Image (tube, rainbow, N blue to C red; front, top):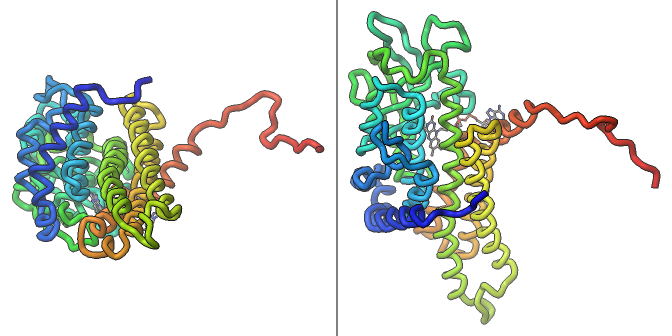
Length: 396
Ligand SMILES: Cc1cc2nc3c(=O)[nH]c(=O)nc-3n(C[C@H](O)[C@H](O)[C@H](O)COP(=O)(O)OP(=O)(O)OC[C@H]3O[C@@H](n4cnc5c(N)ncnc54)[C@H](O)[C@@H]3O)c2cc1C
């Protein structure tokens, strides 16, 4: 077992950190204010080969690993300090991996576009709910030569900027529970409309919005995997997304902790630096623990996912739950340490707002907990010979 980046991965991380620091960070506040995706930086990342990293050479990529991708992603998080922009990257990464894993040669053109700067979106949620994805009502109706897709998705990351959309829907005419299917829909096709960026509490540099499909024509090649496979394919897709929330959250908190430590060292109260106060120390150590627990549980989840281990989904939900809850708590800790300076409009208050979105995006905390429990309870309990389920209490 090796727990550390290779020199090449460290160099990759450094490269993308520099790039994000010079490209994303200076424009981040402006994009958050106008609720727009930073397409210029998006293109720059694509030009530098960011999206080619985890794609096999046989599919036009660089043949790297998802570890290499995470090293680069962490660099972008550290350099950009823009959580919203990074949520947009996560949405695209899930789609990219889904097309690599489940797409065939007729869908290679989608992969090619995703690697060179097209923006991807993963559309599961509908107005009547995002937690119960199996109940989606977006439907593909069979017609000569394919299907016509009808439905509306809401709260979709990247929707206002998307070029390619992963749509979870159903195929009418197939038996119930065997009809849920994933479609790859080109945003620029007739009948696809995207709404304006929603007004949200945070993460506004990641435009999130509605997408409607008004009889959109789909060819058979627009189905990812096979009809009826949509749920298992989607669970596989969100397993990566969820653990990436942890990877991103830990890297994001590093910068916030640095800022908070710097501030605390320079701030005095009662004629002492506030770092002398144990309550402040507790907040700072909480932030550090949030980074370490989130980071390592997320790496463990990625390891499980890549090994196709049966615990991958459980670990990924654990990474998402730990990552988002400790990120939100740590952002509040930072705000307390900064006092009013953290409550004013600025980096710290933005961190609080942005971190709260991670409790909902990618599935709520309660849904992660539900998923963890469902996976746990599925496992057979080991039978130990001669050991009753409840060991009798021994007399003292
Ligand atoms: C910043 C952001 C980005 C997003 N991006 C995307 C995206 O790219 N694609 C996409 O498809 N969606 C996206 N969403 C939507 C998100 O996935 C949903 O909001 C989320 O899954 C919850 O769905 P809901 O809001 O409809 O709440 P509901 O599903 O209506 O749930 C309401 C409440 O009931 C609880 N609940 C529901 N079922 C259960 C249960 N069985 N057990 C216990 N509690 C339960 C939930 O935890 C929640 O507290 C995004 C959301 C945000 C905030």
